[in-house]
Length: 225
Image (tube, rainbow, N blue to C red; front, side):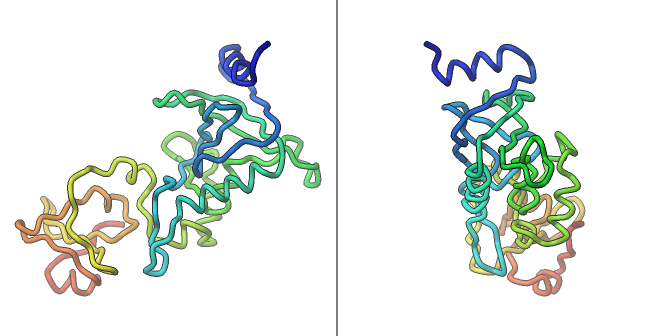
């Protein structure tokens, strides 16, 4: 007798865009990954804060990764999950577009797009490097400052690829990085594109600053944002 796991594997092998249907609903692993019958499913077109990632909200550390996971869990708890596989990522996970079946009240025959719900709530970014499917949802969430858009946050991708090199101790609120490079003395604030990649060496005259005014007084100019 075929197990649920076996059925999922066969479905994936049967066609490049196989459909997976499972009841009851899936389990949230993090903000953009769920589990169906023992199979890890990465939601197509979005990138959410990693489960252990934190964001700076009004000067306070906020566990945005755990919050994003909870938001996904709440969405997929609303009904049976139906996913259509698109690809496999480098970790071997199925990348899929998933919907949650709900009683039809809004005319949506396919149910709620799980990834769209995450982006609309500000619990994930549209992964524009791979797809523009959720770009409009992101623009609206960002404009409304929902979820992660009301914080300072390095991108989930940058968080995953942070080098292991030790960083200077940062006192609370002193997170502005004064860097000296080919373009001169430039400071970077949390949330900017290259913030996570910037490494500070006090031996070179680089420093951490608590305010932009302090960085400017030391001769540093703002990085392009």
